[in-house]
Length: 483
Image (tube, rainbow, N blue to C red; front, side, top):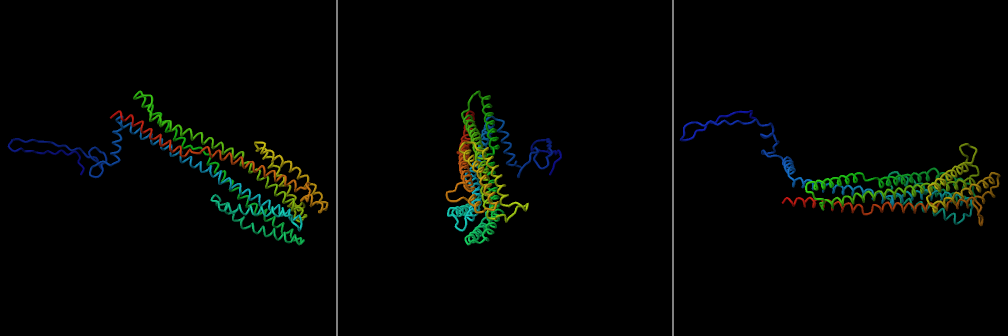
């Protein structure tokens, strides 16, 4: 019931006395939904737990011991929050750096090796075909080694947890088409041993399958894995902004608490708060230095290692394709024309590949940062120049109609070192040496970047716990003075 200011007169009669005592009781209006004071009430007229907690906190804040307890709790919470955020962010960057070193870069390198193995197998098959019915053993072994290497790397890539989505699609396509290619090569070889011209047609069809199906799939696989590698790079090199902000906030709160303590007690140091400040500062400094070194190492691995590897791999692939097209120029003998319907298709493709090779080697020289990296690239450049001269001479001989003389100028022979094939071998060996050097540089730089984050996760957690405990001890020391 709501009372609106009703005054009630109560008559009291006392036994044995005369008279009356008139007492007037006035009731105040009650607030809707609450008690007389208007404060919300819980069941049975009692206040809620939240309201009681707020009231106690308000009462505690009016006394110095209460304020110290609140400050201690806040300081410990901020230091612990800093430690948790640092552990969370650093753990993510350590995982990404580990993936760069142990997963995504090896997968990218394997994808490049798959491409090179397929291109080299195609080159070896055409070289063996040109040698005639008696295919040289070393050429046959090179082809078989390339195919075995490509098959092994495909199995490894399929089994890798990192190869998903687009990568698995390309791996499946390569696994399906590779047996078809090898079947065409065997049919070409069988017909060639019998002296049948049909062998050349099978070889050209196999080369078309390689150029239009297998190599594009291998290229897409390489690009997908390289893209995954760059994503891991970015994650590993990202600055831990949340941890840095939490650390600065915790430091600022600790400095404020010590200044407040000094102003109230005129004491310069509070050992507990000083220890908490030191622990927080160490974690923040460690985080800053470690992440800076990690970014530097991973940046060096990408700029001086991975970028050079990509350029060198592209150059080596261009050289392999150029060599295959050079061989097919002799095999086709003008049977396949380019888009202009006048030029030999394979000779046009050879010229295009050589331009790509020249551009790649020029870029590789720019990226090489030491003599061990520049020397093999310079040797490859000299080999390409020699290759072009020998190819031009062989091509001129073939155009004149002297196929028998042009053939050894391309594939060489026993004791002959002036063929274009010998120049190609020099270029390929030099590029392989350059790739090995850049891979070594990448691994060293990437591992250095990962090592800079070593121990930071465990150290951040331990020091944050120590800092929070020290802050509570420092405030507890002050509280003991009030007992």
